[in-house]
Amino acid sequence: MTLPIARDVATLRATIAGWRDAGQSVALVPTMGALHAGHLALLARGRELADRVVTSIFVNPTQFAPTEDLARYPRDEAGDVAALVAAGCDLLYAPGPEAIYPPGFCTAILPGGPALGLEAAFRPQMYGGVALVCTKLFTQCGPDLAIFGEKDWQQVQVVRRVVADLDLPLRIMTVATVREADGLAMSSRNRFLDARARAIAPALYRVLSGIAEGRAPVRAEAELLEAGFDSVDYVALRRRDLSPGGEVVLGAARLGAVRLIDAVPVSAGERG
Ligand code: PAF
Image 1 (cartoon, rainbow, N blue to C red):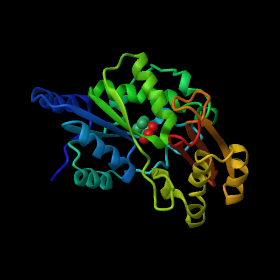
Image 2 (image 1 turned 45 degrees about the vertical axis):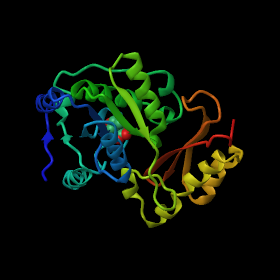
Image 3 (image 1 turned 45 degrees about the horizontal axis):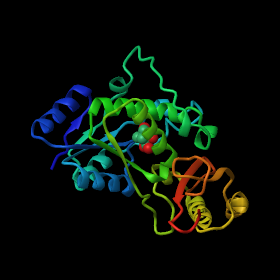
Image 4 (image 1 turned 180 degrees about the horizontal axis):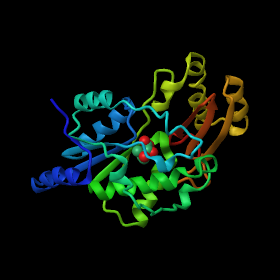
């Protein structure tokens, strides 16, 4: 089977219009490629919830600071296409930069609320870029729903807020984080971990899970450093919407050039 690929908005919309004419619903899975089992779980959920699933692959420059890893962000379109075919994706939207940011593009979105603090304290450009590219993808594709992973918990809250504030007519759905056997959250950046870093990395999940199970967060940073992380950006306990409270434990820590993030929801009954 070959996977149809749209590289511009006209092709994307023409394909989706055909599905709409047939009365079919559409799910969008936005990604930056280098797909792994976590992405494929989003796609599988899309197949359950909608008649058609579009996966987008676009490494979005506006969510990277000049000092970050845009240039070396993993890209593997051939591998991604094979994975998408096997997973039953209906259409890959893989726009070139000009389809998202055409010459003269000068519009920004400045999200507040859930976009403030946590990740934004360390990556201030991140959520403006995410809000902008997701809004573009949503308006270009016009899906009934879009599906995101819980690992990027704050990103999901930001996207939900933007969708509500801008009256975008779609639902935002989430899927639980897919983990390696040792607990490490799947991430496209995991491939940059060398053997030593890979052995240390699951400590992030262990420490966050410990807090989710009731341990006080006070020693979390020390525990991560003892486990071998080079630095800890934050470990925080928040409500699901990121307001102060105890429903999800979020963390980010660095191992050499690799920055890992994770989020572990507190099970019902474990913390208030
Ligand atoms: O989570 C990601 O892969 C990206 O932030 C997203 C949502 C595709 C926007 O570029």
